[in-house]
Amino acid sequence: MYTPAPLRPGDRVALVAASSAVPEDRLSPAVEAVRALGLEPVVFPSCLPESRHGYFAASDAQRAKDIQDAFADPSIAGVLCARGGYGAHRLLPLLDFDAIAKAPKYFSGYSDVTALHTAFNQRCGFVTYHTIMPTTEYYQPVDSFSMDCLRRALFGGLTGPLPLPEGHALETLRSGTAEGPLCGGNLSLLAASLGTPWEIDARGKLLFLEDIGERTYRVDGMLTQLRNAGKFDDCAGVLLGAWTDCVPEYPDRTLELPEIFAELILPAGKPVLAGLPCGHVLPTMALPLGARARMDADARTLEVLS
Figure 1 (cartoon, one colour):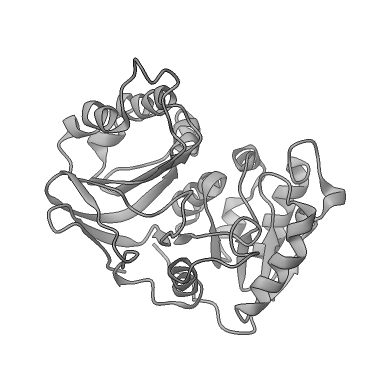
Figure 2 (cartoon, helix red, strand yellow; figure 1 turned 120 degrees about the vertical axis):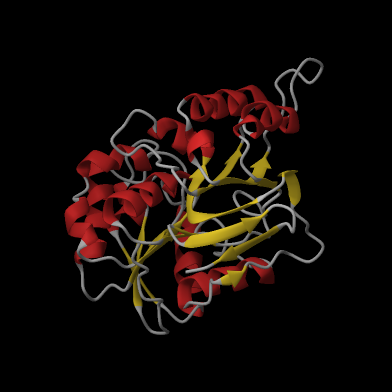
């Protein structure tokens, strides 16, 4: 797996919207926030209000073109997804992965961007970064832990033991150690990948999962899809992140998330760590997807090896 060079102060970075439309009032503050990091943002058409197409930032063709153009432009050192939302997986048949693989560069985002992370890791062979995004979080002041993790992802240093926010502890659901490339992201997107050419490949990897706004029975259903597809048998270990606003539909007759995890993930016998501060939550850590890492569920640690 190739790791693109970290960014440097003064580098030009593309702002693209691969999914939902960028709120108009957030674009200018987001541009300034990227500049405050020492980078020079280049706003691509998908981020502009006139490009909006229904609930998408732009048409599928325009959003795919922005991504393709950003990777093809040698003056662009990195690609930042402005936000998530919905629709990135619609772009996968439109992208020229062979061309992107010939020009790997820093790429970041999270949530709906999971579809692109998985494709770039598996089809293009380079590391990508699960980080907060300009028009979702850091267009406004964000906690120092999250911003430090972002800077480490942008400029290098996202290796070794990954720190946790002060007072935060991980939870061991099944003991053991495991080592392998990091993969995964948003559960909804990973479940949607099954049966497609861009299906998540968890073999020998540390599988990270998180989600937001899903009823617990929906989380159950998507984890069941992964279980039935053999992903928990295939993987080396499981990392469970934030499950923000994932609440029961019927609180008086439901399974809680710990019960769902116990019934669907633990039987595979792989080490499982829960409570990773990553996903739709602040403070949040950054993860280099595709990089090799080691988890120790007994010591409750996660270390990026390369």
